[in-house]
Length: 189
Ligand code: HEC
Image (cartoon, rainbow, N blue to C red):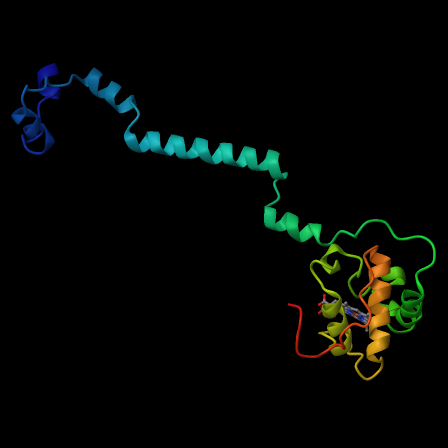
């Protein structure tokens, strides 16, 4: 019975080439076949390795980044406010800018740049390394989206004063005066 079961089915295919190989391979018993079926094939091994690598990467990612991608982290980082609010009185140019801000900007950008219907201008996104003084002046001058243009309402000097006030509230160095007049052409992305 053993003999019959292990006999090649038709005598073609891999079985026959086995016969041609030297030294000739012994016919496998059903028990050996079952064992072979339980052994890890190269494909199965590759799958296991890939699975292991994937799980390890996921665990390392969770531990290192708290499950948040670096890009998402950077995005959240710029939404955070720059340091604490300054105390005391602003220098004269920023104090003048404060009056202009409270009349023209506060309704949307909130008291002390805290944000409201418009973004908080104390967000890190607007610190000088990302948004230069000129960038600020330009967007105030020209407007953008829901943000109205102030080119007909505020003079270049008034815009410069507002920029000084924004920098003071950010705890950043005040712009060097005189600042070049704002333009509508050069724009921050
Ligand atoms: C009617 C509401 C409103 C008023 C008033 C307003 N803003 Fe804005 N401002 C916005 C909105 C909305 C945005 C976001 C625009 C966008 O990114 O599309 C914005 C954006 C800005 C930006 C950043 C631009 C950007 O692309 O991220 C600055 C700087 C700014 N405003 C300054 C000011 C200053 C200074 C004043 C006053 C002179 C002022 N805004 C008045 C609504 C307003």
